[in-house]
Every structure is written in structure tokens, then in C-alpha cells.
Length: 86
Image 1 (cartoon, rainbow, N blue to C red):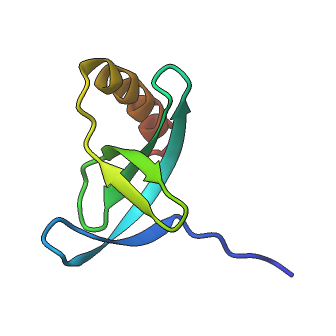
Image 2: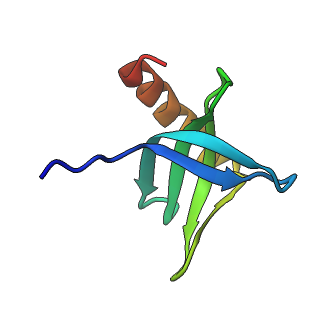
């Protein structure tokens, strides 16, 4: 049996409306002890990154606030974007 894995997720935006995102990569950082999600929003050309938080029942995305984290994730975004051809 063939399984279908999709990289698309429907999330609630800050305005409460649903939006579809396409996950490009999830990057774990031992240095920051965090996971980051690199994604784009359907209908947009921009690539985004957020801190990915996991609880026992749900996931949430938080803003990246530290410059060192931004430097790390920007290098990773450039790598992902080049590999994905986005």
C-alpha cells in the first residue's frame, strides 16, 4: 500500500482565518535547543521561518526573536530554497 505524505498544512492565522502553508523543511538546532519550520503561504512568493513548538496535543509557531537565531535560520532558508527551487 502506498502512503501519501503531504507537506501542506492548514493553520489559523493571527486574524483567526485558516490559511494553507507548504512546509519546506523542519530544522532542529542543538545550539538553540529549538526546532524551526521553513514554509511559504499558498499564494505568496515569500519564504517564512518560525520556531516550531510541540506540546502533547498540538503544535504552534512562534516568531524568531534572537539575531543569532535569524542568522542561523537565514543560512538554512537559503540552502532549502536553493535545493527546492522555490
